Image 1 (cartoon, rainbow, N blue to C red):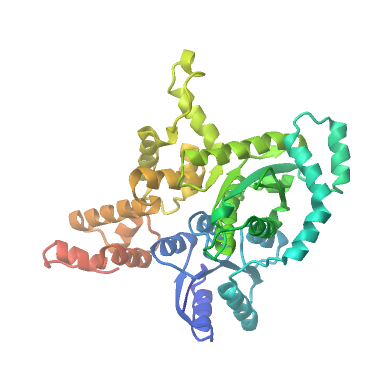
Image 2: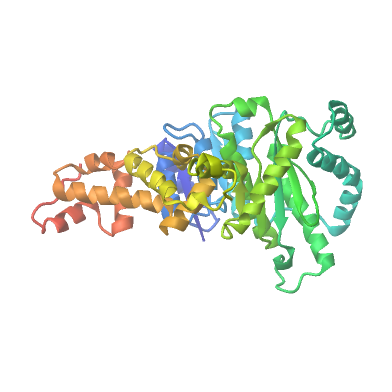
Length: 456
């Protein structure tokens, strides 16, 4: 039995899709609809959904932004984009963010049924046979040697780089690059629950390389063997990607790390530590980027509960640490765990308390305020506060709503707008899910049953 969320700012479109899916043979038992991305995010935080279908062009939050938020918080939820725009850049951005498919309105019912069925039933990435993988490794061994040269040798001359890139046949286009280090725990991998032999580890690594190539295909990813059992990936971005004001590139890089960890766990039952570099311009920056990625992965010893690490967070932590040290001792004090400092959490909670009434509040806004990645922000908040960041936001909104309904005569829609909801109906649904009562029932109960709110 499947549960689906449809997001479109045209209620008629959402209702049509909802009715069609409920009457299909796909065993879909519930279809919820949302009129914008913010409503959709609330639903996703409250319930489990097997699939999201979303429009691209919506007011307040685009479908691209919605996908970013979804994949920051729930990596196992597939998304299908349905849009009136046939532009290639919309489709490219959607697929790069992990969309399972991109449909153009008006959508043929048979086509909609096909892509929904595919998304609901697709469980495994294609993993090629061991024989094919062995052939692939032999065929690409020389390529991997050249790539390792580029990412590990910081003193290559421009002529050296030109010769190597010539050998690689234009594989590296850039002009911007990021490096990812993947450290897989092969001893705990696989679904047999038996001891993993050396031979099986090699096969698992071949499969991991295949999964990495599939995961990073929309980023022109290049994956190859690193030292020992590690895997290295290079992602490439164009100048257009970097200059697009609608795309938060660094957030998307962090999402890539989450996607890699999820795919390795889902398809190989393998735990992995993912280290992500920042972005560099030019092939000559690759050795420095690999060092960043390795440094980021090394933070797993400080944060054993976290799997994905972004070097930009470490740089910010070091900056915060230096700011708290005396100038003459700044170089002597080792970095401990400044992101666990109460002042950091205080900055986060203070920002939320000052902005939770804003219906357009997003985790990216909070992360930019405190200069941490969204993924790391969510991790340290839950670790220190013992609650999910968005549960904290919802609690603030509901507490303020309760106060307004007890202390004022504001109408339901006025209370909704005052605490950060654009739709009174959505506010009522959220209120009942959290408190078990409708706003009107709560006000009546709080006032001893003498006065009830007129639902307006």
